[in-house]
Length: 314
Image (cartoon, rainbow, N blue to C red; front, side, top):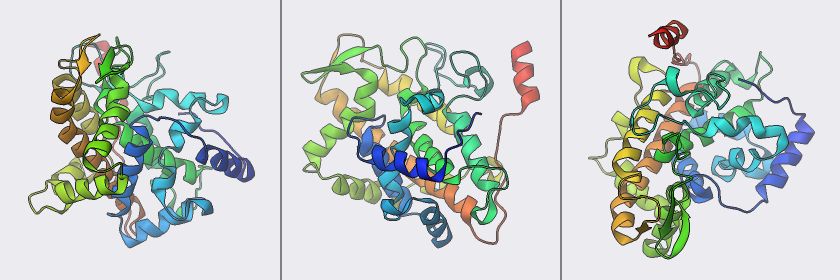
């Protein structure tokens, strides 16, 4: 996967300018902020210290402040190559995902999807003990990309159907407002919940999600964060979850021209909240695994090339 070499001075300038840019972003800036804020509260001391060392000083040690950076740069000509790393297109109505079949960009370059990006950037961080890259990796970029893409892969329509571009071409009305289905899931469900239940206070919504999904003794957080074979990341599992949820909830009753109102909103909101909680918990678990002092990181799971070749021949 291509990497961009950027000088420290240029990097700092880009971050400062983009930090000031307004605009709606995938999962919405609120959704990505919430995911990283939830993750910050679950970091070990060692992981927290490592994250702070990698962040630019003006972020104030807060990963959440830059969790939308990957969206803010993607349309800049220097970063257009990152566009396909935000999503996965799956076959229409198949309602399943396979890395070898689906992880590629529109020109069939393999590994260029959000699952491939998570494998790549977690591997870069894991290959750099003591935050000293022996391979020329930009570890600040790796941290910000990993944190953002872990959020994207939990948005069901980021693993949607190729034919409608993950709901982007399905035009609907969100109450009275004309929009597309993808934007409903990226932004509008969260915005509506903020206004209806939290007085437009994002910190209130984040705390409610923490209480419901991460503090309650009955919460399933332990089952969320454990990958098979003690691996550091398992984005294929998250992608399979997302496409299944897209079929059962996002696409259902959301045909072109439909008006989505309270019934759709209130029945889908718990799922959105749960996916935000899962993304935050899994991001924290990944960073804790990578940055735990004195412990070699678990292996980075990755698709096995011979298996991909077998799939292609079959």
